[in-house]
Length: 91
Image 1: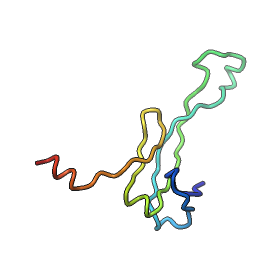
Image 2: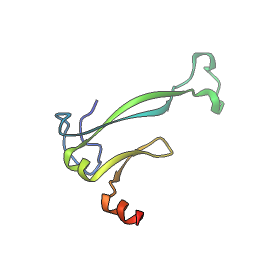
Image 3: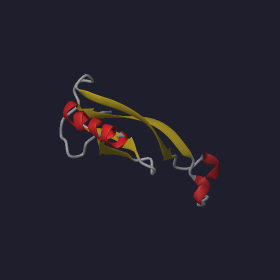
Image 4: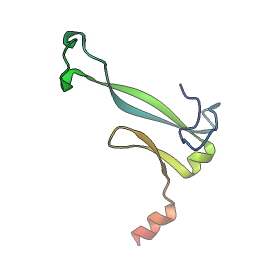
C-alpha cells in the first residue's frame, strides 16, 4: 500500500492520486522454495515470481524527479532532464 512519497528524502504522505504521479513497475522476486524441492539447497531452487508494485511521487517531487528501474530490478529516484538540455544536445 502506498503511504508516502517514493523519494526517500521526502516525508509527504499519500492522500490523493491527483496530487502527484503514480508509477507501476513489474518487479521480480523469488518464492521461498517450491514444494517439490524442499530440502534441496541448490541455487536453482528459488523460482522467480513477477509482481506489480505501485509507487507515488508527491507533486513537488514529480516536478523535478521521476522513477526508474535499475538493472538489479530496484526502483530509484532520478532527476528529470530539462527540455533545454535536449534542445542544446540536438544543436
